[in-house]
Image (cartoon, rainbow, N blue to C red; front, side, top):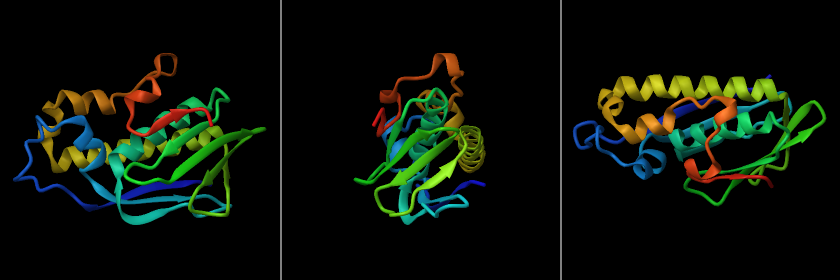
Length: 165
């Protein structure tokens, strides 16, 4: 079983930010900083650092999860750090290796996709509820829009995402 969640520790002040006009880099790297909880039956790869850009991470994770279903290894660079998560197909399971942990995690591709999609949905509901002006921001809408598997965005559409290993 996989648990994938977030905790926003530092949110940009709603009074000081023009949410309808904030740029994509700020959204992906400077807003909604916190922790990422990532656990499986095999390992705890959580990032309880207090400064992980949760939106950037959730976008990358969702993108990587959908791409790995096609059997393509993925590397997710954790925004704001020099750490990576590497996703490698191993038969019917996906191996997740983190630079900051010696213990790999294993999940099914379906589990990875479901957990990633659900985390992004929860995060969107949370930040949109806190900052309704985000819904008027074209860059935000572009970043979080669902992409059908047949029309996936390229890795350059998400900060820190690279295909392959």
